[in-house]
Length: 458
Image (cartoon, rainbow, N blue to C red):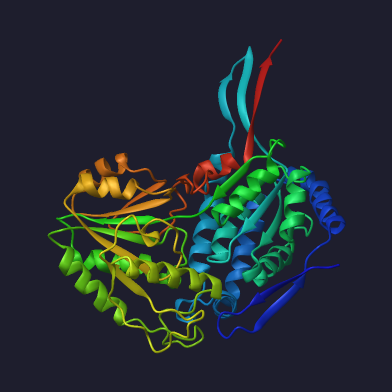
C-alpha cells in the first residue's frame, strides 16, 4: 500500500500538498540511476559543474516572491522577510568560488624521480536529508558542493517542506543538470533506513533532530557509510558587564525569536552580567511585546505560526512547567494566540538549569534569562548542556571573547552577533549536536575522499 506524505499548512491547518512515497523498488531504482549517471558527471570539467550550479542558483532567484509565499504556506515564515534567497545564494556562490582551491591536488613532490600527491575524489552518491526550518539554505549547504565535487545527489526533503525539494530539482534540471545526477525523492522513514542499511549511498548528510540523527547512524551501522549530522541545539548568549545593552538585546532577541524561534542556531538561553540584568530584561520585554503575531501572508506580521501544532505544544509545555517551578513569564498571552500553531513569544526569568526550558531544545519562541556574576559562572552555565552548536558573546573586548571561546564546548563562537552561518567557516558542532563539517574548504573535504599517488619515474 502506497504511503502518502502530507504537508499541513500551519496557517490554517489545511492540507497544502500531498505526495506519494516511493516504494522500496522504485526508490532503489532511482538511486541506481543516480549511481549510473555519476561517473559521467564527475568526468565533466570542474568549471562546467560550477557553471551549472551557479546557473541553477540564478534560476531559483528569478522568483523570490514565490519562494516567500510558498514558505509561508509550508512552515509559517512571514512573507515580509522575503524567503531565503540571500543566504541560499551566498552559500552556493562561496562554495563555487573556492572549488578550484578546495579540490586541487595537494602536491608533495613533482620531480624527475617521483610524483607524490593527494587528490580529492567524489564519494559517488550523496544522500541529503534536509529539514523544514530553513529548507532552501540547509539543502544547498550540501547540494551545491556535492555536485560541484562530482557527486550525484539524492535529496529527501522534510514532509513539512515537500515543495522545496521539487523546486530545487526543477531549477537544477532546467539549467542542464541531468535528472539522474540530482534526484528529489519522496521517502518514508522505513524506506530511508532500508536504503542506508543496504549501502545505497556513499555519504549521508542529515540535518534534523537528535532522534533522527540516531536513526540515521543506526541504519548505517556496520556499512561504513559516513554519516554527517547537524542536530539539536540549545545555543547560549552571554552579555558581559562591558556590553552595549541595546545592541545585545537587539542581537540576541532577533536570534531567539526570528522564524518563531525555529532556528538550529537560535538563541535559547541568555546569561547577563548581574549589573546589566534588570536593564537587559526591561528592554527585552519591551521588544517582544512589540512583536506582531499573525498570518505569515500579512506584511505586518513579524512573527508567524510555528510549523506544526506539536512543536507549539512542546514549547507551551516547557513554559508551563517552568512557571510551575517558580519562573516568571513576562509576556501576557497575545490575542492572536489560538492555542495551536499561533504561539505567544515568551521571556522567562527566575529560571535555572533544573528546568526543561533551560536544558531541552525548545525550537520555538521562548528564551530564559539568568543573571551571572562574571565570565567563570557564564562559561560553566553555557557548557552545562547536552548540545554544542554556537555560542554568542556580547562584549567590547575581543581578546576576552576569544579567551572565553577557547573554554566553550561549541562549534562556533560569535562576538556581538548570533544566528548566522558564514560559508567561509566550517559549520560544525559537538556533543548531541552531532558531527560533521559543512561549507568552507572542509565542506568539500567532507564530500570527497582522499586518494594518494606515489609514482616512481624511470
